[in-house]
Image (cartoon, rainbow, N blue to C red; front, side):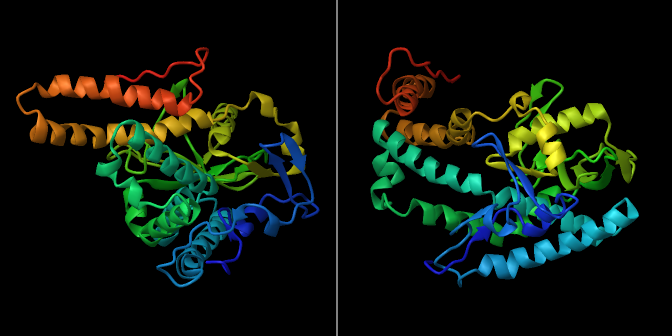
Length: 345
């Protein structure tokens, strides 16, 4: 893996659609809260070993999977810009596959997976689950490569993930004001709408995605109600633009691409962002919601304490094991001033 080249999580060609009139490229850095001007597209939007696995030939994902995904999407985008709609079924599928790929090839997701592994190792020790989770068999080093391999395996199964979007239509969205921006994730998933937070996954019928394809255009993926009609082309209103901009911050992690004029005119202090602390908690809570801990509790009850009520053992586990371990994870120094994390059973 030492010879793997810099791998992009946002295609250079996609970024180029948001260049300035003089064809230079501008970015807004969210880490430095400043404008990055005259940037080379080869120098931003990627990292080494993003989606690579020692079980695959070097650069396999990039050459054999993402190459076609991007080419098909670029062609579909070109026709959409001319026709102001997505008319061909193959183009609609190309957009769906591109959206699924962008969700998987996220550079920030790679970092979260590395942190997630470290968090699980800590929780296993605190909750006496080291033997059950076999964390002792997982080397402490190599977390970045394991996260890379996990993203690679997901991209290999891209069509399976894209299938969850098969009922999502693809429409063209016009924004004549030319003030659309592109987050480094490559798309804007709607996480907050009308004051309510949404946690739509890929299989959610209410998942809604905008893919900006130019300062004045985007492609929208959404699932319409059954037997309802929908326009192939819509204009993004100012109200919807406010919604778009709010969710832009929830999707961008390191930078936003756009024309210099729009980037400098945007009030970045008013744009909301995901709390990394909350995101970290969210990944662990997905295990809880998925029944991982309840399964451990049920096995323990059946093997060791079947004469005790399962509900009581479950209550004991969460109150005496899970909640204290989580609070120690996020407050390792036991600072009495730190906010206590509580979880509904």
